[in-house]
Image 1 (tube, rainbow, N blue to C red):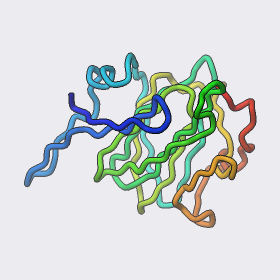
Image 2: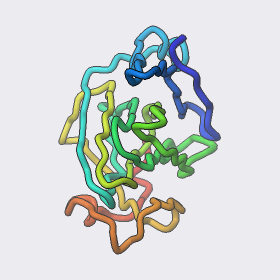
Image 3: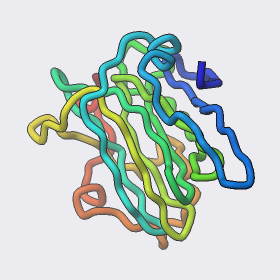
Length: 183
């Protein structure tokens, strides 16, 4: 197994630590093994990889796709530091509307597995950050959805002062969470 992992307080969310081998030349790690990840979380078939470059204070989220195109994601920060957040939006879940936040960085090499049924977002804590994620469903703009990441009912500390946050117009104008945002 190339991964060590930690369960979180929300079932299905995993913090994954790849084994990193370093020496005077730098380091080597397997960033993804289909076999090893499936032995941890069960069947998954990633079909699309995405990457973003963002500067300090950028906050992206909270995003998800509605049925029938919900997505599971495996996310990581290749360089820089981000606070990655997953919010449980499964109506029947005992952890409904709870969230887990984890720092991902190019230094700690952590990954975060987010199953279907979660809204996802991240904030950039370093000067810049390169963020990558694998998705098990293609992007479908017709079911693209999300809600306001600053909704105080969610209790998320994005670790970026509100006056330094940089959001897309779409994210800034999103409504607060409602029952329609449940999966």
